[in-house]
Length: 367
Picture 1 (cartoon, rainbow, N blue to C red):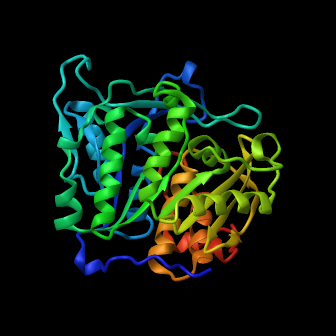
Picture 2: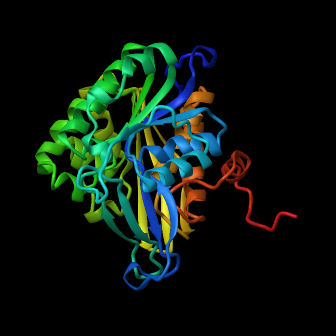
């Protein structure tokens, strides 16, 4: 499958890739439970940010994050963690706050990994955050895309679900990115807990259908396509446990017909046998052709949070560096598989490790 995306030259842009979305603190109790924890390990993370971080740390690209952070000690911790990940923080909007967070605050996400029959569990504390209150006046997208220059722009449905203001910001950002020839990728990333508060499933479909009018690349799971864009997968069993390639191809071809601006659609197929053993593969559609990535069946999992973001990072890297869509899909799938072997939301893999997995290298000790 040929990659037909036309990507701006590196020398003409300050950033290879830019993400727009929320960055939260993840409080991780390790092998224990949130409800009984006496200590937590702190990570930074966010659906859109994780892609920018991995594209820098694993794939060596210059990336930045557009977000808003409450200007207090917790906000400074988030900034420090972002800087440790090598993501440019110059485009962060700092919001004034008070001593108790009633004016605005930074989001926190408590997440335990799960094991065996006990599934992973997340407990978010993210209402009234700085980024959910950010408006179009907080970001100069004409300057970012028109003067600084960006080769690839990535955002997603988690940010879009935060507030009516975030929906305006993400739509305008996509429009201006397209105006200046920047490739736009959008991860549908459906979160029922957010959309239930943002108007329900009908509003979710309305908002996402508007945003994808400006996207070149769409990423999601089969549930995301159904919930965010209102499509149906004929013959799918409960939970999409069985892969029917023809049914998924029909759904993706319908999306491509409805939105001719979209060049490539990726459908992540993730079956959770237990919290510790997953099956993982990705179906991709472009130019009325379908390819399926290498299948990782019986993949042993340490921490599954961030697998989709890690796929997106590898996929974007592959599309930016290769004319072969299937190769890009396998970059993403291998990177996602590796991300499940380490703790935290973000990738700890190297490009060499990703390519070794793509080439079916074993897990023997390296000396």
